[in-house]
Image (cartoon, rainbow, N blue to C red):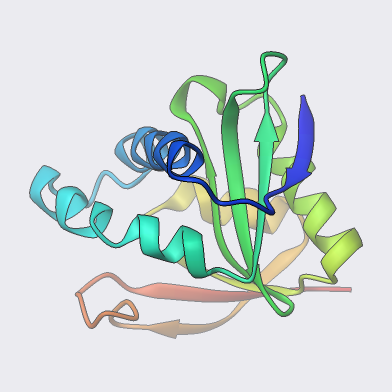
Length: 148
């Protein structure tokens, strides 16, 4: 396993990360319909190109198996492919984000209790809740910050 910072965001890399995203979302975002996932998926490549800091975890074959995006000290996204979940990769990425980028806050879907529990285990606490996500969809978000 190796954590790297993506400098060149080539189309082949974006396509690999999109597969990671889709695998992760289908395993964790059970509240989304297949149609909703397909709609969101259209925006993911642009988000991956525009996020200021994109960090990837690769397997022993240099294939991306997870990634996160950071804006200032905010964790904007963290996804681990379904096949690699539960192996400590998310923990390693989040520790990297906290240590190297001073990440101290994030938002998580309330309907994704495993993610909420993971972030709580890593020291984050809920400080705010919204009824809708940032696109106005009826998916409550929990805003969490690192309790130091």
